[in-house]
Length: 88
Length: 170
Image 1 (tube, rainbow over the protein chains, first blue to last red):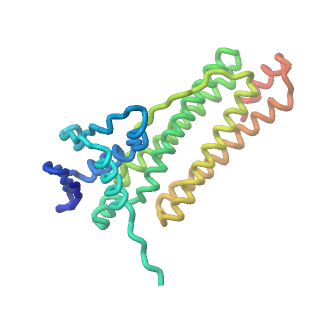
Image 2: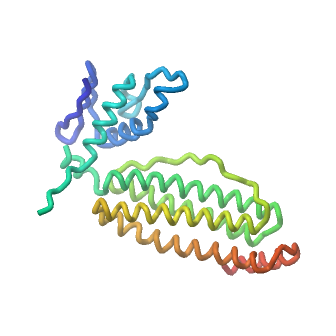
Image 3: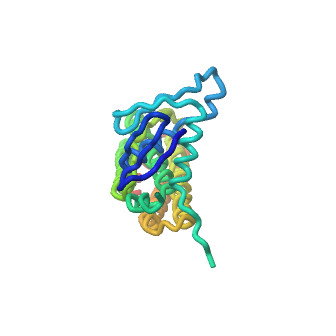
């Protein structure tokens, strides 16, 4: 279970048993790292299906499997996509 | 969450991604022009070499301008890596034609970001990019002019070196 919530100008990433507090900069860096992962490569060329990423300027390490990567990609996409304004 | 992101970020995230891609493109252009300057130096086209050294540093300035813009507005600019820069050209005309194609590619990319800004209603970035749209037009004109000069005067070697002097005025 992965969730991302906010606490007074900080972002709280709950990654299973682990909790990581991110600044906005850390969040942008995480978004970039996650988006840079080519998920298709997980299914070819004998890929282990595991990604090791560092967050918070190398202070924390996360071990992600394919589903975790997909979920994080979805989370990043949803929080950075502004909701459509209603046009009357 | 959306409000908090807006508080930290003045420009649209899609635009930031495209601007980061543009940084890579400007860095590649800068490195390519440096390779071209080297080719010109080696083949005795001194004026063209000087021209491409200047072009290379101009592209780097463009890159830094975008870099700073992203960081100043709460985003994160990424330092680019440059790969696959060619050092081989058939002739000076081939070199200038390649440079023109490079400029056209950059212009198209800038226009694409400009239109994305419009679509995403990112007015600040649209205004920021207006300078680049004009600049690219100038750059294209410069290269097109150089291609025309070399194209018109054929491939006589003596002639080519005489034309090289005219490049200083481009």
